[in-house]
Image (cartoon, rainbow over all chains, first blue to last red; front, side, top):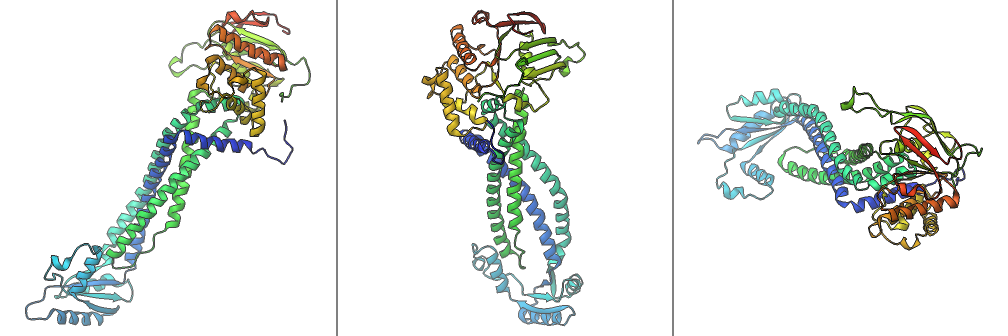
Length: 307
Length: 242
């Protein structure tokens, strides 16, 4: 009956994995539900994480912005728009803290806007007469003086508006702060919601295999071994759900990144796919394992499996 | 295969020593005086002995068995199985030395009778080939080899219970505890199930404790009959040890 020392009996592990595979196969609806629930819960939590991360990155980028666009007013009949723009650019170049200034003709602005729409709209046909005034692209030696310079240039009579990233910084910082605070609560909320739904889903799976659970309990399988078997099953299905969520999110984030890259005039920091994937896989696995073992514990108690 | 037995032959297989048990009251029932399910029961079952526990519903038969396989802890007194106090070691280790038979068969519907019986050995960690050989031997021993390839839904209730017994006892336990094993069966099927249990008893002489309502089966086999009423032993006929 006894095995020699040093040779662990791995057959229970083999049977547990076999029963897990067979159980998941026979209860395909419950297994697929467990995967989808994990994927959904993980996606929601990861989206909050991504939103928080993206606003923090945006705030950092805006703070570091050393570029601005000076939009000019409509010129009077007498003056040449191009000549007036060049004169403004010269005045800007003379200011301290300015590295360079370049006149952006209206055609270039229209072309950039067309590119932002992904080439789906022919703005040249929509606006036969280009409505955009000339503007001046200004590059600063550093971001620190951007606010003061923008305020100074905005007071010039030829200038309609000065657009620069730091202008939006307070709003983005506010959003980042909100997401950071709300994010934690959301993640906890989604985790609890995901766990509750996972437990309910797993209860259906365990319920359909109650005979197997009872036989094992009667034959002397320890509660921990049984919980371990279902936790392993839950972990595997949760991992699949996490992988599904990770694939979906990477795809979505990549598409959003492409869209933003054409819309925004400054380069974006590449999204952190590594932590995102690890977060999805780890939380999916943990959610599945916790949900399945909790479902078993609740059902075993309710059905008196070990009594 | 047989579970290890304690050394001294005089040690009973199962002993309830001054055992009382009171179920805790539910929230709604708090304030009412709790009636003990068992009240100072002294009962010893010798190695290899067959004992019927009889009595009306609620008399305490099932509670006695549940105390023996560790599902309940006595409020007072001690239960010993194979010389060892119940509850000292983890319950699942105790159960590996017992054969538990219940009214419900709990056969796995997707497995054949042979696979169901082999499952009992697999659960205890036997390799697949050995588990299958043990199952074939067990079915053959109990005259159930013709049922080997049938699925549970192709078996009658009596056949299902016999397969369930084969699975529960595949590890040849030294003690068999059966709680109303024929509760779902007609008399003819119940007799067949008892024949299976008797064959097992003849083969390796486990101590068998059967809680039953079936009066017709009591006379059959000439075994010891312990009558439980109101949580006490009302009578004990044919005991080998007291």
